Image (cartoon, rainbow, N blue to C red; front, side):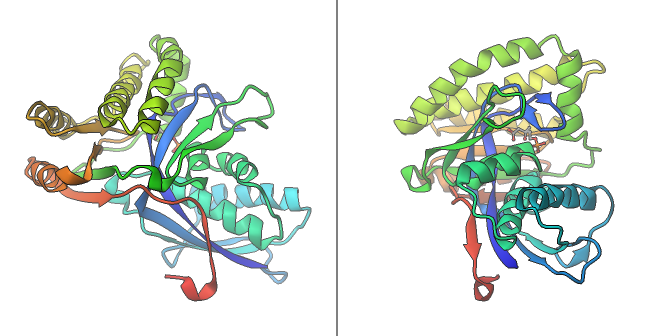
Length: 330
Ligand code: PMV
C-alpha cells in the first residue's frame, strides 16, 4: 500500500483566472500550459493500518495547519473513491524553489494524487486522475500531462467533464522558460482570493472570459505549427489581460512590482533588437520568459543584468506524471 510519483510544475500560457464553483474548483474558462522539467515534486504515500490520522512532511519537515488540511481533505476524496478508510503517511520533496515564484501546489497535488491513488489500489485513466487532481488545486490538473496541456473547463455542474487533455507531447517542441526571481518582499494575495475578488467585482472580468476562445484557438494552432512568434504574442497578451482584470477589482490590486515592469520592458526591448522572447506572469511578482534554445545565452545575460533580479532559473519542456520505484527515489 505504498507508491511514489513525480510531477512537474506548469506555467499557463492561457491563464486560468476565475472559478464558477469554489468547492469543486470549476473554472470559468479553459486554460493551456506548458509543463516544465526544472521544477518538480516527488511524493511517497504509504497507507498504514496503525495510523489514527494522516501525517505529512514536506522536505522532511512536519506540516500542520492550512497546508496539512488541504492534503488530508484531498486524501478523504481518494479514500471515498476507493471505499477504504486507511490513513496515510505522506512524504513530499519539493524541487520547486518557492523563491522562483512557481506555485508548488501544481506539482504537489499532481504528485499526491498519482501516488495516493496508486498506493490505495486504484488504477485511474489520465483523465480521471486529472479530474481528481483538479479538486486539490485547479492548475495542478494540467501537470498530469507533459508537453502542452489544455484544461477544458467543462459544462457539467458536478465537474465530471472538467479535466486536462494533452495538446502536444514534450518532444514536439524545444522551447525554453526562464524564471526571473525578484527581490520581492510583498505580502502575497493568494490566487484563490485574487480570482474570487476579480470574479465578484471587476467589470473587466466579462471581457476576459469572452476573449478566451480566440486566444485558445490561436495558441493551439501556434503550438502545432511551432510558430514561436504567434505563441509568444498570444501568451503575453493573455497574461496582460488577466492582470488588467485585477486593476478593475474592488478593492483594486496588482501582483506587479516596479521590478516586474522593468523585466517586462526589458523583454520587449530585447524583442525589438530581433531576439524573440515573451513574458508571462502568474499570481505574483515574478516573471517567466519564453525563448528559443539558440537565444539562451543572450536572454540569460540580459535578464541577469536587470537591477532587482536576484536569480534566473532555466527550464525545458517537461514530462507528465511518472511513477517511481523505491530505488529511484532521489
Ligand atoms: O490553481 P491555482 O489556485 O494555483 O491558480 C493558478 C492561477 C494562475 O497561476 C494565475 C494561472 C494558471 O492558469 O496557472
